[in-house]
Length: 425
Image 1 (cartoon, rainbow, N blue to C red):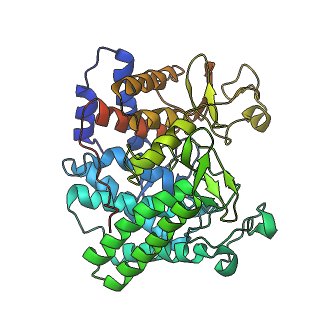
Image 2 (tube, rainbow, N blue to C red):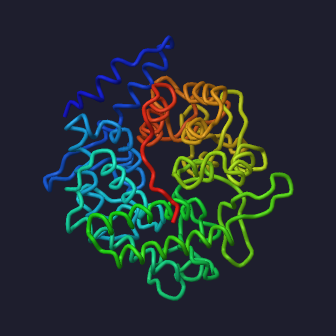
């Protein structure tokens, strides 16, 4: 496929900075290089150098295509095929987060965002194009699979049969109260949760459930299901407000990253999205919301244990790659080498800080940081040593490139933002 509209935007992008021009062009076209068209009529989207398709990553990798879905038939076709494959995956196993091209489970880590992302992609495709043909009987089965799993995991210890080797309590996970929120074994980073109610995941679930409610009511004319989806959404939202907000001595009321409903909370943020920083990007709150602003100040400060300041970049890192030296046995000469005393920074977090910034000065600063992460191949990577851009992880990682392309289109080309479901009511 040629993706003429997308290639035209990439080719016609003008900047006095040739580095920015090259980075944007590479980023905008990156998702098409990760795609393979399968015999069952679907499209498989690799996450990059790992030969698997994550439900989360593939949805994020397709977001730039949504801007062209109405004008570029090939972009439209790609989105439809990806939505169809994600639907099949949700029917096959709603607890798995990643699959191979032949629908084998690559990773069976239950993360709430793996259920929410495909629903949001389908809803945004519909709103961008007006095309309802994606909402097949099979899509309804996939949405039901996601919904049913959310309901079960509201009472994980009482109803769920999900187990994962290595989790506490013989694979069932740590104890927790019933909060109305959805239990999760793993974070959007694929790391194990410290406490099982991941607040960014709950935020995204709230938004996705509004989308699912509208699809149920407007497309499938199932008003009873729409009511049940609304009830679940209200229960999760009430749980966030009751258990997910804490009083910080310096920053005031902020959102915790994880809680257990029993009085314990974990204060941090991670660059993988959904994150606390990304709450307005998800459509959960406005950027000016006072609790979000307090949380944002916390996240972008030394109080966040994942925040790092370096000679090259400053930003949020992740426990997922914090000590990669030990994990990979790297040497100082290898790109994967990290000094275990230096915290990493993720380009995903840098770009998200730019997308959620309320000043042009901060946006420009994050653009400069994003460009500074380039080790010379014209791409954004998973993480890097903030003092040495030549020490990085994941030579090929599609997600940050897709997010960077969206950042440039929204904040520098002034393309209209993608729609979000309305949370009122």
